[in-house]
Image 1 (tube, protein in one colour):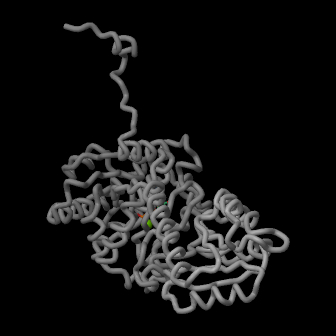
Image 2 (cartoon, helix red, strand yellow):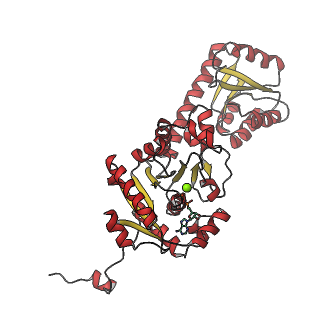
Image 3 (tube, rainbow, N blue to C red):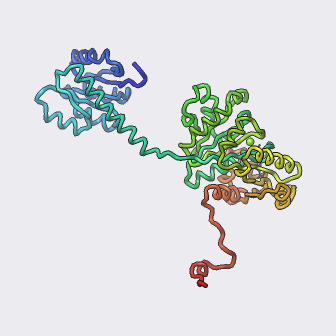
Length: 396
Ligand SMILES: Nc1ncnc2c1ncn2[C@@H]1O[C@H](COP(=O)(O)OP(=O)(O)O)[C@@H](O)[C@H]1O
Ligand SMILES: [Mg+2]
């Protein structure tokens, strides 16, 4: 048996028929008999328990007959393919069985070849149907990667990443938040999310499909958690980051990445892959030199074009924003006010700032930043010009 074997269940009230069918299938690679039932009622129960791919169903059985059983199974497990087996002269029964959801039929007695080719044919049709359905139901996306970075700790990278991601979800975007702070990731904590699995599990399971390792937040946001044990963070390489991000891109409109405060190879890889880099910076003297250096490094790496500076904790003691901007020779993309009470409360409760107090200035600024990223912000009209005058402006 292989993992892709067709799992078959046999339903017939005659024990001898069941064992004959079993013998016919015994040596066929790719088909395995997983269960047997002697009447319709037993078949319905067993089918729900075993979820076989295919059921070979006799029609005339004591109690619940094969047609009613087919109908009941079709209602609860529509993917399960029923092939009806009956004796000559039951044409009307066969018609009714097909109407009840059977996929095909075989007239007893049948040969092993007939049986096997019918199962395989029905299975091929089912596989084609499933792949068509899944291609239609999950349109492939092409997620934009937004990396929130800074070469300093405590400046608000995680706060910004969590809130931008949460706000993008509210704008009907499919968002995955990746915690790349591989040693001290705190994203799940900030969202009160139990870490059922993390990147460490992805790694130990053989680096398969990254989408299977996402945590689901009640808002719809999905999170790829950093390893829970700091040592496990060292297992993750730049190549892994590339693989993960490329795996996730088709699953989301936005992939927001939170990072640690240093240029580790994994962080660099995420910056390379980024469509936009949000450089979190607190406008005070102790940060100025650091942000300057950081911008220089990004420039040397040819990444400066992607950088947008988010000035955070604005209003705490520090330098004025325009001075900060001119020292850096870089515009400030978004100013985020200082609100230690709100951010502390949000951290304690594991609720994003924008949800805890949507009206706070900090929340409004974070939402605005996310709208600019998504291109959905409403640009203010010219002051003093009433809407009517804009609509009916005279020409010439
Ligand atoms: N706008 C803000 N006003 C006040 N405190 C903030 C603000 N943004 C973040 N903080 C606080 O600063 C600390 C560091 O924030 P965090 O997002 O963890 O930074 P980083 O990820 O850069 O280390 C946290 O205690 C957080 O609550
Ligand atoms: Mg952080």
